Each structure stands twice: as structure tokens, then as C-alpha cells.
Amino acid sequence: MTISDPLAPDLRTLIEAAVEDTLTLQQLNALVKLCHSMAAVALRRKIAPVMLDSGVHGTNYRDLAYDCIAELFQQGENGSLLQIRAYFQGIDRAGSSDQELLTHLRRIVFTKVNHGVVRFYGEADPDLGKILRNIRLSIQALRNFTVVERFGETFLLPAFSPSLENLPPFGREELERTLRGDARADDHVPAMLAHLSRLLRGQHEHSRLVSLTTVALTIKSIYFTPERVDPGHVAVEDPFTVSEILTLVQSACSEVLGRMAAEYVDSGKVEREMFRKYTLVVEKNVALRFTGEESDGHSLFCGLKSLVPSLSEAEYRVTHRARLEYLSRLAYKRSVEILRMNS
Image (cartoon, rainbow, N blue to C red):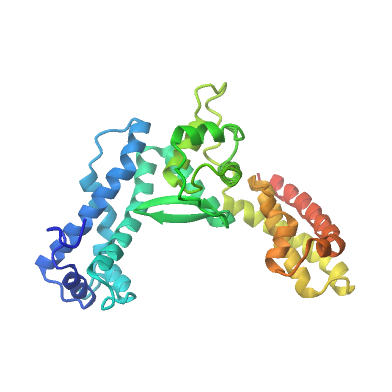
């Protein structure tokens, strides 16, 4: 769609009117029509493959598109379009070309579509909805993937990894076949993502950007593989959410490290600021052990080096390694005890 399309008449005037709260009914209808057209196209591209895979048919994209953009057109007390107004107030509209304004509008519409798609998956395919929810919770808590938006599609990229997006992407079947080499049907979602992270980082033939939907469908396929002896026992619903695991682990680490602070800090063995960094590294390390991520990138050394950029491996081995490994063992043991008590 370009700015000259009949669905986008005088877009600059529409946006300025929305920001200034002077939209006429005709202008409002034109803006709704444009946003709806964008949303419907994005929805068809996102949902059609998933619905085919899940066996759900008869999706009314037009109605669903209206549901997705409804929030954009919620009005304040004075009739202003609160979200569109706030969004475009933060943009240099005068310095933007017509095409750039259209791109900005498309971006906010696609954001609403992404949220709507997750809701739709949860209703049309509850298992897929749970997997998508747990993927988002895992990424939000562990930050081991970066969420990237490309042309209205949501992709995952291993954190601090080059995207290799000039290479061909993984196909759905190839990704599933490769992931099955490490993943098991009783792995919870964080562990699945840990396997995926190692898989993507360890190869150089494909792009490391993978579609969120493709990842969710791949995990679902592994969970519900026909070859399972006990197909009813799958890890779609984690016994703890990732945030609950991290809360319990943080409690255990705080208890252990608070007790050990006297031995290290008060005795002068470790400066208080360095012990604070020990605490952050140990909490992260222990949490990742419970959620399945065991990549070298999350080792104790790498964790401390991220907080002390000048740290060398030699200095780490001599000064910090034994302390961190000992504190991690204590914190992990206490975390196991607390998780068992709360399970």
C-alpha cells in the first residue's frame, strides 16, 4: 500500500486532524478504513498458516481486524483519539515524508494486530495460546531472546547474537526436525527456548531470526507428537510460571547471600560493591539452571564480566571463581528446597 492508494486519502491531513482533535466524521471513517485494511492484510498473513495447522476454518478476518484496532479508536471525554493522538505527538510529523507517516501508522496498527492474534490463538487453539503466553513470559523474565518486529511479523533472535538475516530462514519442518534432536516432550517452555537458543547460535546456514508463530507451532508439535506413549502428559502448562520460579529463586538466593555477606564483606575479603555483583550473577545463574538455559554465554565468568568489563579470565580464575561457584552451589541447594516446599 502506498500513500497514493484510495484507502489512504490525504493521510497527513487525517493524522494532523487526529492530533488536533478536529477530525470530521468523514475523516474518522477514512482513518478507520485505512487502519482496518492494514490489519486485515496482516491478520490473513499471520493466522492462515496457523489455522490450517490447527484445523480451524471459517475465520472472519474483517471482523477480527476491527477487534484488533478498536483500542486505537477509543475516545476520551472530549472525543479525542487518545492512543493515536499520543503516538503521533511524539513523532516529527513535519519532518516526515508521507511514506514515513504511513509506516508509522502501519507500525501502531501491526502492534495491535500482534496483541489481537495472541488473544485469537488462545480462543481458537487453547494449547497454542498457552505456549505463546509461556514463550512471552519466559522471554520477559530471562531476556535470552530479543523480540524483533519485521513487516508486521514478530520474530525471536537469541540475545546478543548477530541475526544472519541475509541467510535463508528456517522452514517449519526443518526447525522442528532439528529441535527434536535436543528437546523432549516433557521439557517446559523455558527449556525449549534454551534448546532453540543453542540451536540457532550453533549454526551458520540459516537466519537466526525465527518467527514467534513458527516457534510456538514447533513446540506444540513436539508436545503432541503422535509417537508419545502417554500423549496426555505434556508440558504445555508449567507447574510454575517463569515469574514464580524467579521469585522463589530470588528469595532463596537473597537468604543465602544475605547470610554469607558477613563472612565475605564484613571480614574484608570482598568489597561490598563486588559482593553486590556476585549476588546478581548468582541469582541469574541459579535461575537459568531451573529454566533450562545452560549456554556458555550465561556462565559465571560471562555474567561477572558483563558487570566488570575489564575482568580477565586469569583474574577471574584467581580471585572470583571459587567464591562464585561456592555461593552458586549454596543458592541452588536452597532454591531446590524452597521450590519443593511450594510445589
